[in-house]
Length: 245
Ligand code: NAP
Image (cartoon, rainbow, N blue to C red; front, side, top):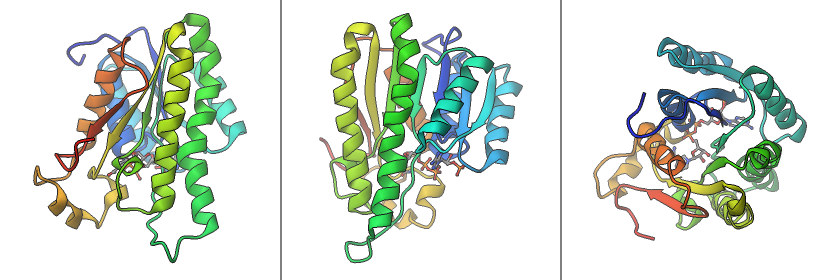
């Protein structure tokens, strides 16, 4: 079990956990004892590999397919998790897409898809898990935003907008839910070495630390947030020293 916190009575849902940052978060929460629902969109094999790794360490997990930008899929996923593992105590809204576009080639479809997958999904998943969290007067919601919520970013304006919207969503929920024992925070990484950043390692030259971040470093920040009942509506920023905001 990871040092510092015991999540053994908790059930966690990590969206987009088949690879990259989500997979690292799922593994980290399982190491702390949480039973983990590993959500994915289409890469079932990758999600099953994450589940197998958790189980080989003695943890509880299962893989659950759902496009989190679709309300019916989210409702079905949350019901299935309740049956398989119990009600969700910890929600990590991590699923996301990054369609790289310049101002001149950005289309309405790129904008719409990005807002649906990166922002609307967090709203849908949050609404779906809240009734059970409120009933127990305990819950932790962590939204994986990005340095692009506040800075220029490397993807495009649609991506900036989706992540800035998520920050607003976080503050709106945080203010309304703190009295019920539910915290809502953001973890905002920049330039983490995953499939999303494949072929973009040249961007590492902008990082004062001299390298890109690792998914496990983001997972460590998520774990930190979960252990704190007094912190809500905040953003933890990880960027190797690129900006201090
Ligand atoms: P990634 O390696 O591309 O993985 C994306 C994950 O999201 C996959 O598990 C994918 O599932 C899932 N996903 C995508 N669309 C989905 C949908 N509609 N429904 C359910 N799952 C969906 O990305 P990553 O780099 O780990 O990024 C994770 C999060 O961190 C994203 O929100 C991203 O915006 C954010 N972030 C990343 C960086 C970075 O530098 N990497 C920096 C800042 C913020 P499948 O495997 O089934 O496709």
